[in-house]
Length: 471
Ligand SMILES: Cc1ncc(COP(=O)(O)O)c(C=O)c1O
Ligand SMILES: N[C@@H](CCOP(=O)(O)O)C(=O)O
Image (tube, rainbow, N blue to C red; front, side, top):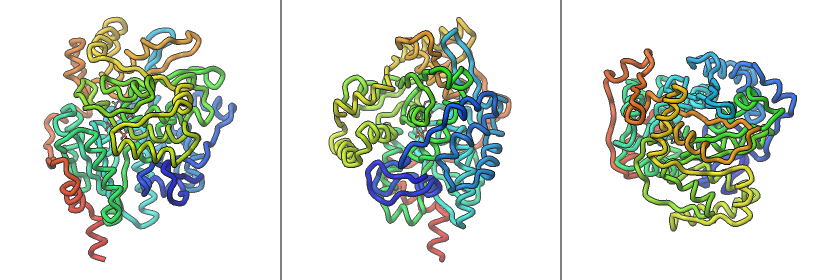
C-alpha cells in the first residue's frame, strides 16, 4: 500500500514513511492511493473477537508489508492491554435504537488513547529499527495532548512537545499534560486558541529547514496512522449490532474531523454505514458548510465542550480530495483560498457527493446541558459534554427505525466535572488510579502565539537536533 498527498506533490510513500512524516512536504495530508476493502465474510468474522485482533485485521491492508503482521499483533495486544474495560470499547444501549459507544476506557479517559497507545508503539518500533529519533510537536484542544504524553512519555526515540491553548481547557486535561515529569515531554501553554496551536504546527512542518533540523513529526489526526487506528471501533461497534448483515448509523462529536473521517474510511472499506452525522457545538463551521457549501472561518467561542472549539477542521481536506474526484489541483485551490480569505466554496457536485453519506447539525450550549440532565434523569447515564453534543444532534436526526444509531462517546465525564455538575448536579469523580492527579506537580512553559519563539523552544527540547549538531 502506498500513500499520496491531497495536494498532489512528491512520490508515493509506504505506511511507515507517512506515519513518521505526519504532514506531507507540500502541506497536504496523506491518503491511500486506493481504498482496500474487506469482504463480507471477513467482517462477519469480527463478531465476538477481541478488539486487538480486529484492529490488526482492519489495519493490515493499510500497513501492508511495512510492519510484519506478528509485530503489529504484539503491539496491538500491548496497546489495548492498557484499557480498563474488558470490551475495550463497550456499547451501552440507551433506548431501543440508540447506543453509546464508550471510547474513554483508556489511560487518559478519551477516545484519543485508542489510536495513540498503538501509534506510539508503532513509531518507537519503526524509529528503533531505523536507528533514528524524532521530535513530535502536537497541537491540542485538550485530549490529544494528554493521550500523547501518556503514550510517548519515557520512550527512547522521541521528544514530545505539546502545544495547548492557555486557559481554554479543563483542569484535568491540563494536568494530564503538565504533570508527567519525564525528560522527553514538554507542555507549552500558547497564548491563543487551538486553531493557533494547529497553525503553528503546520507552519513548522512547512518550514522545511526547521522540519529537517529537529526531524519533525506529528501525531495529530493529520497523521494517517491515527486515522486508520480510529477506523477500528466503527467495525467492532457495527458488527456487534449486526453488520455486515444490516446497516448502522453513527453520530460523531466533531472538531478536527479525524474521528468522523475514520468512519468514512470504514465505509470505503465496505462497512455498511447508513449515515455519518457530524455533530458540532456552536463552533459550527462544518454544520454550516454541509448546509450552505461555504466553509467560512469565524471567531472561535469557548464552550463546555472545549475539545471541539475548533474552526479549522484539518481532515476535511481528505474528504474534499475524494469529493472532487481525487483532484489535487482543486484541493490546492480550495486550501489556497482558505489561507488567503479564510473561506472557500465547495462546488455543487462535490457538495452533493458529501451529502450522500454525511449530514451535519449543531447543538446549542443549553441543549448540551439539557441532554446531560435528561440522560442522567431517565437512564442514570452520565454523558460528558462532547458526547452530549452528539446525543443532542442524534435526537434531531430523522432516523430510519430499523437502523441502529451509535453515538460516539469520546470522553469520560470526569474530564469535565464542572460542566457536568452544573448540568445535572452530579460530580463525576476521577477513577481511583487518577485520584492523585490534582496533587501532582505541574511543569509548563507559557509562550506567545509566535512561530519563531515556539520553534526556538522546540529546538532546545529536541535531542534529534542536538545529536545532529554534535555529529
Ligand atoms: C472529547 C472529544 N470529543 C470530540 C473531539 C472531536 O474529534 P475530531 O477532532 O476527531 O473531530 C475531540 C477532539 O478531537 C475530543 O477531544
Ligand atoms: N480535540 C482535539 C484536537 C486535535 O485533534 P486531533 O485528533 O487532530 O489530534 C484535542 O483534544 O486535542
